[in-house]
Image (cartoon, rainbow over all chains, first blue to last red; front, side, top):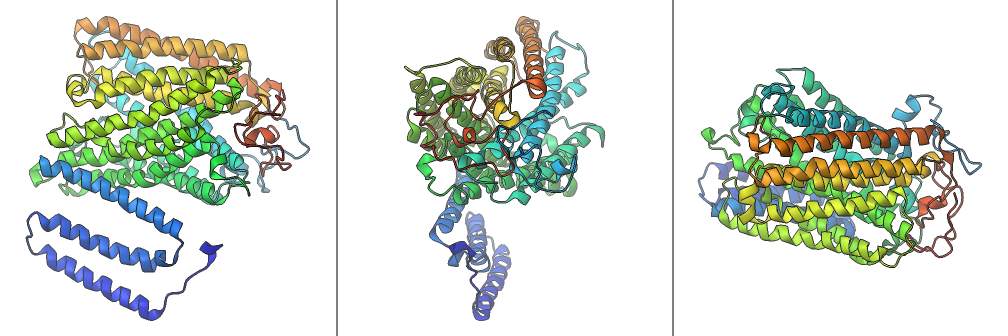
Length: 94
Length: 542
């Protein structure tokens, strides 16, 4: 069974991902001090999504899983994007 | 509890799979059938409490002004009626109870994929239920917000909202874990050779439901936690005085709570899809269409939440888009109804109580569904929004749909679970009384709603009196029907006639197991199984 195989990530990869997450956290804090107007939410969400993608792909091993599982996670993200998008759609036209 | 087995292997009542005895062999059991039954008993117990609260509401509304309670008590009673019925009764009713009992057997599996998680989910449900009940007797009295916990009122009311929303949070987790378990079980534990196209339609409906549970319920969890944050920390997310947006709360609440309607009704549709072919003695018409329509309902139903908010002050463009999307959901629902009717067409129908409940479902759900279009259409919704028209529509869909689906499931799988049969004549009488009581209770509410009677009001103008009084009399008739139904099922459980494996002549896998089934579900390989709706060679075993 494919899902029973455990991929062991190298220390180098794990360290690189950690460094990237710390860097993105720094960027998140830095950006929050700048008023980007309409882009405030978009930038914040883009940063949060990027960070969560790193965690899901590497620390939660999605990168090494089968296509079916990747598809399911993609569907979840798609639905979440629709939820957020349609809510903001109301705000944008209010 | 009386039970017997048509197999030398002991039933799941006799064999708990552990050394524990008595109540511990139930509340610590990881057997999906025991967990399902525990859900069922709890759901029915809470249903009775919810019904009593509903009867109290109807009695209060028998006359204008005060009848039996004060206005504040009335607000608390309808809030509790909603919270108990939605979160504790209807949502877990069919998926957690009958889904647990039947799904693994339909898949030819010995249990769900994560049995311990399943038990944990039941415990979360019990803790959440306990907290919801605790909110009645602690703090400054029971919450008075309505089951929707709308801001800004829910942020500032001094009643015990904190405990109630935390209860909802925990109940939500229970639902998520059940959904996760079912998705994994359907993917991983199908019997060798059982393809997706051979799944029962009940399994398909549970699959669609489980996805909604997993994807939408976390949003409710976060939303109710945000209410807590507002109340305890004064964050201001939904408070306009602090730059917050109360409409955002409504979005977040309905992103879950509209799909939740499909968590409630999809499994009931699955039950109807199981019952109808058995009693029409015909393979289900449009198998693929019904299966796909379950997925379509789950998906399309997740995109229409803001039709609850047409008068909230959201943008007109959003009103237009959400109104259009709402009409799309009608398509897969209609696909199901037409296929059920086509299955009955030219069938060798034999009328038994489960079929009557399934037909009751179609009749009542159709009225509920079609009146939903009145509400989904923005132009007409403006006029009937927050009136008794909504209350009636909702009860036709949820009680007439899910409630009758649940009763149908109880009557259909009763002989399988207990190995005994209830009195069918009494069951038929109870069904007839329920149908009369139900329509007398809820149909007048459509009329007074159209006339302008607002929902949730403690008092009303004299012109609505007749409608309210007919409705209240209907509630008494409905209660009589419920009492007869429950007493009949209880008597059947204690001393009903013993039945064999397949009293209805069904073709799905549960009818190949002994009644009641053994711990691991099957005592032999069901080698004559040709598909869930292939009745050739299937004989009734009464």
